[in-house]
Image 1 (cartoon, rainbow, N blue to C red):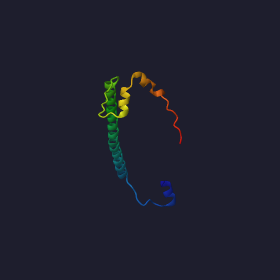
Image 2: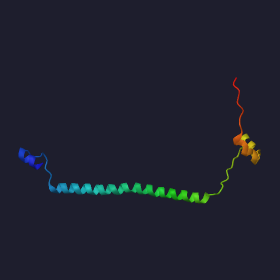
Image 3: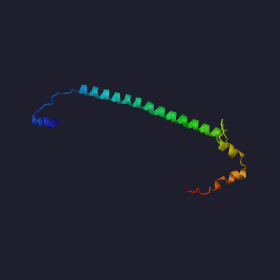
Length: 105
């Protein structure tokens, strides 16, 4: 770039000295390092939160694995009452029950 200015005889409108450039580079470097430290914390907190969630899921799975958790219902509907009166043989035949064809009017 300096060669072009020497050939054309033109000068740059603003000249920077070496001290100014060194301070500018130092300031930019410090700011980049500071920004990198700030951006690292959210990533670290997300990793810790996901590790805690996985640990809780593993503990919950280990506690309830193979155990029947009772389900309480306060109100039973008519279908629930009907199904509770069926014997095992009748309950086994439920999937094979065929509905007669409904006549069209």
